[in-house]
Amino acid sequence: MSAIFEILDKDAGGRIGKLRTPHGIIETPTVMPVINPNIQLISPKEMRSFGAEILITNSYIIYRKEELRKIALEKGLHELLGFDGPIMTDSGSFQLSVYGSVEVTNEEILEFQQKIGSDIIVPLDIPTPPDVQYRRAEEELAVTAERLEAARKFIQGEQLLAGPVQGSTYPELREKAASHLKGLNFEVYPLGAVVPLMESYRYAELVDVIAAAKKGLSPASPVHLFGAGHPMMFALAVALGCDLFDSAAYALYAKDGRYITVTGTYHVEKLNYLPCSCPICSKYTAEELKKADNREELLGRHNLYATFAEIRLIKQCIKDGKLLELVEQRCRAHPRLLDGLKKFYTHSPWLEQFDPATKGTYFYCGPESASRPEVLRFGKRLERFSLEGSVLIRTGPVKGEGSYDQILTFKAPFGAFPVEMEEVYPFNAEVSKFPDYEALSTAFINTLKLMDLNPQAEYTFICEKEFRHPLIEEISKKAKLVYREAWKKE
Image (cartoon, rainbow, N blue to C red; front, side, top):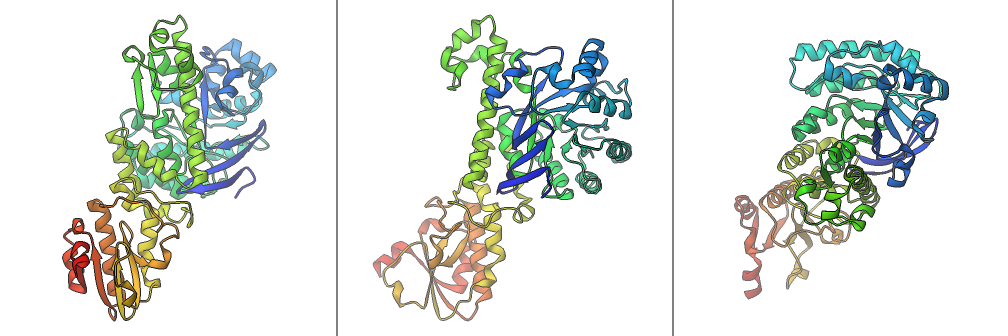
C-alpha cells in the first residue's frame, strides 16, 4: 500500500480508497467531471454540490489558447477554473487520437502542466485504437514507453504523475505495458484508448483489457478508466478494480437532449415522466423540462446527479459486501453488458485472490452467479472435508436424518457441505428454491468431486424432483438417490 493511495474497504476487485493529492484527499471510486476550459455548462465551483471531489480538464486546449494560457501561467490552473480541489489534466492525447497530430511535444506539455499546478499530470502518450494490427500496437506502445520513462524522470515532487497503459485490444500487450510501468512507480495508472470499445458496446473486450492491465499492475495502484462516463457500467468497472472515471457524458448528452439513468439513456423528447427524484426531476415535469429555456443546463445537472448517485451506491455495496450483486443487476440493463458480465466471470480465478473471505449474505441473481469467486473458492477447498460412515445429503431437514453419521446440506450453486456451516458465509446464501441449470451444474460437479474425495462413505441423496439434470445420473451411481416427495411417503 503506497503513501499516495490507501485502500480502506474491498469487495471482489473493487475497493474504497483515499488518494492524496497536492490539493487534498479524494475518496475513490469517484468520477471526475470533464471541464471544457472554453465552454462550461455548469460552473466548476458548483461541482462539489453534486458530489465531485476532483475535476479533469485538457491542458492542451489551455496551452493552445493564448488567453487561457496566460491566466493559467500567471494565476494557476485552479484560479483559471475557479475550483480549489484537485484537478487532473489530460495532455492532448485525445486530440491526437481524433486528429492524428498535436502541436506540442511530450516535454512541452509536461512542463506546462507542471507550471500551471496540475494535481495529476498526464504525459503525451500514443492512444492506439482498437483492432489495429499487432505490429502497429507494439510499435506505438514502444513510443509511449519512451515518453513515459522521460516523464517519470522529468516530474518529481508533490504533483502526481499518471502512467497511461496502452496496447489496443491485445490483452498481452496491455499486461506487458502495465508490468513495465509498475516498475516506474507512477502515482496513477489510466487505461487509455478504450472509448471506442464503450461507444460500440464492446464490453466483453473492455473487460479483458481492464483485467489484463490490472494483472500487470500492483494491486495497490489506483487505476483510472479514461473516458468512462456512463453510470450503467461503473459497477462492472469498479468490480474489476477501476478507481477513477472521467465524465464528459453529462454535458455531451445534455447538449443532445439525452437524459441519463443507470439502466440506459432516454431522449428527453420521448419522456412522459421523469423516473428520478433528484432536485431537477423533483422540481420539473417532463413537459416543463422539454420546454425550459435552459433545458441543456437542467439535463446536465440531472445527468450529474444520476452519475454521482450511482457512485455512492457502489461505495455502499462495497461496504456491505454486495458489489457483485449490483454488478449482475446493472449488467442486465443491456445485452452487451451481459456479455461483459459473462466475460468478467471468466476472470474469477484472478478475482478470487482479492475477494474477501467473509461478507454478509450471498444473493444468487442468475446463471452468472454460479461463476462467482465465492463458488470457485469453495470448489477448490473440498479436500478439507473428511466424510465417513453413512452420509445424508439433503436440501433441507428430513425425517430420520438423526440416524446418519454425517449430514450435509445441498445448496446450489455450491453443492454439498456440512450442515453446521449453514449460517456461515457464503453458505447462508439466498438462492432460488428451484435452481437454474448453471447453478445445478456447478453444485453437482462439486458434490461429485466431494464424493470422489471420500469414496469410503455411503451416501444418500435427497432432493426435489425439479432437480432433474444430466449429472443426476452420475450422482445416482455414487449414492442412493431419493426425491423428497418419495421420501415423505416412506
